[in-house]
Image (cartoon, rainbow, N blue to C red; front, side):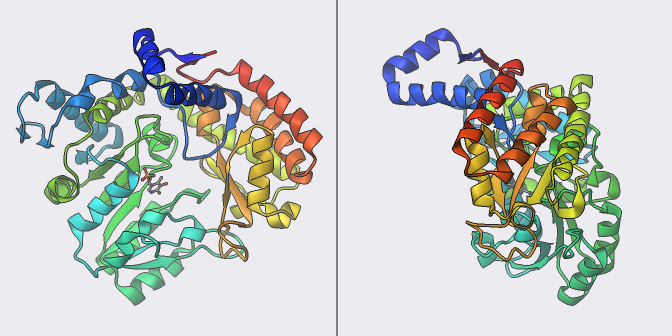
Length: 426
Ligand SMILES: *Cc1c(COP(=O)(O)O)cnc(C)c1O
């Protein structure tokens, strides 16, 4: 096994210089190839991303923006950053794009500092109901600076009730409303959120970190088509690019956003990451990728159907995107940590997760969360999802049966052999 993007000379040199790291790299390639990755935020990047992440663009300091840099020698870095920005604007129908955020959390922090003052109120989604840490969870640094208030989903349906969001907006008068999640298996009513933000006079932001690729591929709605002011997305989840973040916004916020990213928060942008993002944003415009985005959703439907048939309790009763949350506590009498560990032993990687208003604790929550972007990138379709759902149900029904887990793991390995990971040669 080796990733075909690395040159043999570079690999030989690494092996000679650092055996421990080389060995971990080889084992990670095997781990990624032999198990099924169902963590919904993870994916296999396009193979073209690897040579760019390992490229000489890593060596260059490019503080500033194309045409306005603080160092010389920018003829090639200006080319790639301009390509990335223009492609981002085209793919997401955005007036402005900033492609420099180093990752998802700093991208959201840059937006808060660009458009708000300390102590301003931000209305976002509660973490245990599907929101993200970076939307003002009390453990984050941002919580010390801004006044976050949080809307919740309805119990037991798990759906967002816009009347609840409207009442929160009326009560707290937020300067910003955030629509975005990392575990909400439903489409958003973007038009409904726009109306509430208009009534409240609030800036409206969507964090589509999980959904970016599915929006780019035309499989899900784009909040920018509904008049959102700012949209943020990571670039390494469904988009299949390098790790990073991206801010898309209306022209009237462009200057404030750019200033907030640099020099407000960051120094030199990671130009190897921006080069890889530029290529990613070309690849997501192909018919192949549009087909991929559709298949991610079709696979989530097939997986959900198989799990429901096997007795699983799905939060919101199903899925309208790439992800599924199940309540293993009510469905199978086990907490999410036990489910996560047993599935791992059967070769299926996913994560334990809180369910809305979870009666259990974050380390022993009531559910698990998973999704189909990575498995779909290997070429798996509905038939394989049905097969996987049956394996998962067997594990969840008998999580402590070591012999069963071992034999299921062998079946999962067989399946993986037929679907190589993009960029890794078996
Ligand atoms: C993943 C995610 C982020 C954070 O991204 P990192 O790259 O891990 O910092 C932010 N918001 C949402 C909704 C996410 O899902």
